[in-house]
Amino acid sequence: MFVLEDLQKLIMRSPEVAFISDFLKEHPQAELYLVGGAVRDLLLKRVGEHVDFDFVIRGLSHEEIQAWFDERGSMDFTGAHFGVFKFMPKGFDPQKTKFIDIALPRTERSHEQSAGGYREFYIQSDPTLPIEDDLSRRDFTVNAMAINLRTNELVDPFDGQSDLQEASIRCVGNPEERFKEDLTRILRGIRFASELGSTIELATLRAIEHRVEHIHTKQNGEYLISRETIGLELAKAFSRNPMATGVWLDLSHALSVLFPGVQRNAIERLKDVKPNHPQLAITLLLLDQSSDQARQILLETGLNSLPKHSSLRLELDSILLGIERMKEAESETWIQGMRAHRFEKIFMQSHGVFMLDLLKHAGKPTIVQLVNKRKSLIEERWSINPFEQIPELISGDDVLSANVEPGPRVRQVLEHMRDEQLEGRIMSREQALQALHHF
Image (cartoon, rainbow, N blue to C red; front, top):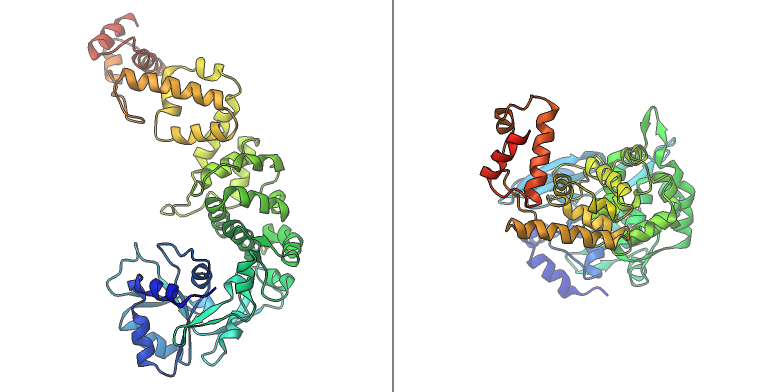
């Protein structure tokens, strides 16, 4: 399964790791390993454009590693709790290139009173530690492989390559212990199963079912797992395979814990949702909830807290608004009786695509047809492209100049005039100004 040519191609097309050959040449006593997700994806032949490079170096001290890499870029010990350097080579933009993780081999041990919090374990780095010991602390066998970049040999002490071939997610060692050490691994297991189209090995699945209720556990008033961590894992999973994510959340009993009140049949709405649309998937899952219930779920799962710059970010207000509007969409009369200015606001601005997708996946094809027909008529009438703004013919100042009392009446007049404009009864500013005399 491991093909040396694939590794060589990956390195050649990734200039940020051009240091590999120089490092090996200048440190003949050291061992340099590519580990983690990059190895897994390489074996699956699914390496994307942006690779998470994660290296382990044996045979050199912490200080020797930092000194060598400091000369070739920025080397920050920002992952101090986990014993990981974050390296950015000279000449590369951190906004466009992912930081490279570099570490010594590590062991980890849970705190005696650990309840599964993300940082409730001791980590110790040791340059003499065998790579197999470092791999033994990892979560799943498919992530517990390494490639020795000096010998180009695959190190696979837990048979992760076979699990990849069999499409199975299996914990390294005892799954109960793995999840007790770090509850975050529960969500990672569900994400990997969804993303890779895998099953979850039975003992691993049973351990997830047993531990999943602890995801909301608090200690000293704080959640063991940060809401941001939960939100990120869920958003990644829904982004990569929405339907499979819903299914594995249900099978692992995580659905009732993370999305209380959401019924199994809601997952069917995700059937044809394409990847990279996490907001659509999560809104469809929550359609049967009230706005207050949906808001609480989004807050409890951290799905409202993803970074602004992230492609996975969800807009809480858009989700809640979508849920509210879908509750109105019970019959064709919703579109037929909708005033033009409101139709424009819902369906003819940029978020109109989102609303149409909600209608489509919620099984309302007739309403989708009515929306598209009415939308096309307005676009043709005003010779615009889809989602292009139709210029306003009058302003609030024009309304006030027509001796309309300031206050709510101004908005009412503007909405009426916009209705007339969109319906084609007023087609010019002159006609609009003349119509104002009737108010």
